[in-house]
Image (cartoon, rainbow, N blue to C red; front, top):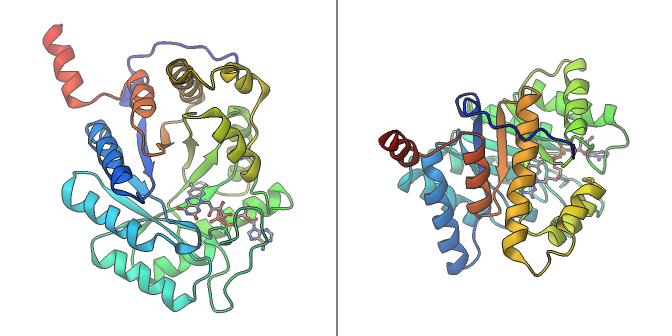
Length: 305
Ligand code: FAD
């Protein structure tokens, strides 16, 4: 993947669709940053924007508040993430209905991680939904929602093998999932192989690559180790020595993310989900490079022509 052709393809923007992921802010300062980000990215007309749900369902209220604000104050279509960890079925069902009542039509359905953190053993609530597939079924019994689910190109760390992992994805699809969004990855071959495996297993929903622009390489490397995503040596080399040079780090990060996305476009991928980390700049730059422009930019371009 370090040998991408960095081609300029002005026609790509017509074929590519994007979605953006945000997390609910904890403080007023974080809230302000999120809304700056939302305002900057809104003109790019993403297909939807999703808002995550904290570990153990700890951010239900903040997720709901953020989703409501997106519904009420923007033109964007929100998708609410929901997990079923540490909750009884009736509690999960009540949250699904609460979201639906204030206008949510899209969900991202996840099992979630134990409150003790990624890597600790998962035990379903005795009266709860056991996994993402059961949660999808619960959502479908409440309404005809658009439901995204997770997929893991390098398999989920708890899956003993790819067959078990793909089998879980198949169960989610059988229960009504509309699309899968992948965990982030940096080696496009792994993604392509995973999609081939899924297709061979009879899974035909879109498997949308989750792209993580590297805002902070050290943090991304630590997080990758915990969630089982490979950090290739070439990627580490690119960010080597940039720990205290945020400007160059950002330039390198946007080039790396654009290369990855352009290579996936060359391989026929048309939908991308960006993990924004509530920051606009890198995502905006990458979208610009793949031809996704705001109306303002398009208007300025045609006036200048
Ligand atoms: P599932 O799809 O239910 O299972 C994942 C895999 O684990 C399966 O492939 C299955 O084979 C294996 N597995 C599950 N249970 C077992 C078991 N008992 N024994 C053996 N193998 C098993 N987390 C949050 O808390 N909030 C979020 O908002 C959030 N958003 C996410 C968005 C995306 C796009 C992705 C990819 C992940 C997100 N996560 C989020 C992280 C997710 O909750 C964790 O990865 C969690 O560990 C698994 O949830 P899941 O829905 O993928 O699980």
